[in-house]
Image 1 (tube, helix red, strand yellow):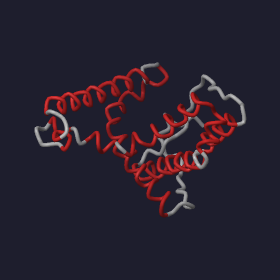
Image 2: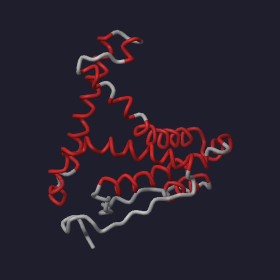
Image 3: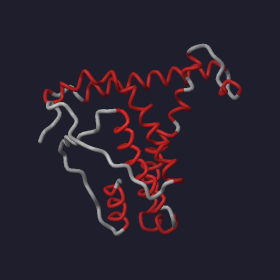
Image 4: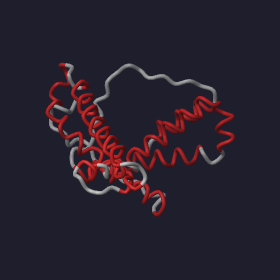
Length: 190
């Protein structure tokens, strides 16, 4: 569940302000694919529930938050969820790079579809570069070897998002449980 997101929205609606503490967390993500998907689907389902609960009365939410915060909330929640739910649409642009037909080519010239596909590749390279920069500090350098696996994150996260959406619709009161403590000792800080 994402009670932290819900609590943050509730505090903001009540007129409080939250801030981030500049610190590092060593929270352990599950290191096996299916438990990882279950953990992420629970978080994403929590995001969906939090968003839907607060959007039950959008006018009241708007009045509570004001324009800037209301738009920020929309960008944060809709952006977080849509990046995973719409990821397969972006991946379809690999078809253009492979020389295959893409449905977007019926809407825009092939040259524009190719530019979009190339932008997608540039974005992927930028994500990898950011990953390398993120773990360049001495205390995190051991994570450098995992940066090339980052392209696997979004397919797994997309599966988790669709699992979360399915459960939100068909099993709204079900929440997956996940175990922790499976990471190699170099990642455990306990």
